[in-house]
Image 1: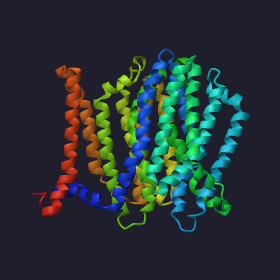
Image 2: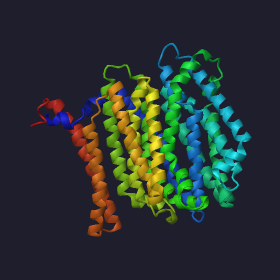
Image 3: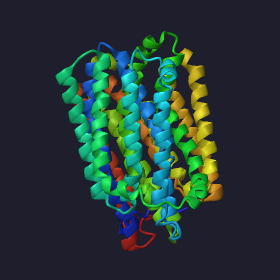
Image 4: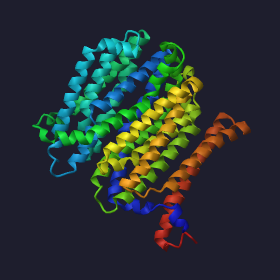
Length: 506
C-alpha cells in the first residue's frame, strides 16, 4: 500500500468543502461559548470551592453528587427531544410539527418530576442521606426544570445555525453564574451547608436568566401540537433516554458509588472520595472539548446524512477529532502540575488519576462519534443496549474494585467501560451503517500520545529538571506534535495535489 494512502488524510480537500468549513466554524463558536464559559467556570469555581470546602471536603463531594443528579435528571426529563427534534425537523412532513410537540412532552415530564419531588421529599432525603439539606434538593430540582425547558430552544437555535446567538446566551449566563457563586458565597459566608446552598442559588438565578433570554423560542412551544405524532416521536426517543441515563451514570456516577461502597461511614466516604472528585474536575477539560464538538456535529450529521460523500466526511471528522483530543490530552498531562494549583492543597493527593480519566473522556468522545450511526439509521434500540451494558459493566467493576483500589477503581472502571462500548458501537455500526474510519491512524495518534505521557515525566525525573525547564520541555513537545500533524495531515497532501499521487512516495 502506498505511503500516502496509509498515512495521510485528504486534509486539503476537507478544508475546501463548504459543509465541513461550516462545521469547523460552528464548532469554534460553540467552543467559545460552551467550552470557554465552562472553562472559566472550571478555573474559577473549582479553585474557589476547593478552598471554601478545604476543611470540610465531604461537602465538595456532596456538591459533585448534586450536580451528577442534576445531569442525570436533565437527561431523563429532556426525553432526548434535542436529538429527536434534529431527526424529525429534517423530514418535510414533520418539520413544522415537531417543535411544539417535543416541547409539550418535556413540559409534561417536568410537571410530573417537580410534583414527585415535593410529594416524596422524605424518602428522597433518606436515600441521599444528606445532613439536613432539604432546601438544597428543592433548589437542584428547580435548576433541572429551568435547564430542561431551555434545552430544546437551544437545539432549535443550533439547527437554525444561529451560533452567535447561542454563544452569547450561553457565555453570558455561565459568566453570571461564576460571578454570583464567588460573590454570594464570599459576601455571606456561613457554614459549609449554607455556602453550598448559595452555590445552588446562584446557579438557579443564572438558569432563570437563560430561560428569559430564550423566551421567543419558548413562546413558540405553546403552539398547537399534533399529538398524533407522539407515538412515533416517543418510539424514537425512548431508547435515547436509556442511552442518556446510562451515559451520565458512567460519566459522573462514580462519586455516588464511592459514597456507598467505600468502607467508612457516609460522611467519611464523602470526605475520602473528594480527592477523586477533584481529579475528575481537572479531567473535565477533555469533556469540554468533546461536548463542544458534539454540539456542532450532531445537527451536521442530520443535515448531511443524504449527501453523496457523507460517510467519508464522517470518517474524516472522526480522525480530526482524535487528533484534537490527542493534543488536549498531551497538553493537560504535561502541564498537570500547573493545573494542580487550581485545587486546594488538601485535594491534590490523587492527581495521577487525571491521566486515566482523560483517556476515559477521549474514548467517551470517540464513542459519541462511533455511535452517530444509530441516530442516522434509526437503530436507537441498539444504542440503548450498548450503553446499558456499559453502565452495568462500570457499576460491577466499581463494586468489585473499590475494596481493593479505593478511589482509583472509579477511574479504571470508567476507562474500561468506554473502551468496551466503543468496540461494541464500532462493530455494530460497521454492520448497519458502515463508515470508513481511519482506525490505524487514530490508534497511532493515541498510542504515541500515551507513550509520550508516560516516558517524558520519567525523563524529567531522571534528569532532575527544575520546574520551569519541565514546562519549557513540555512546550517544545507540544509544538513538535503540531508540526508533525501539519506535515502528516496537510503538507504531505498539499504536495500530492500539486505534483501528483506519486510525489509523496518518492
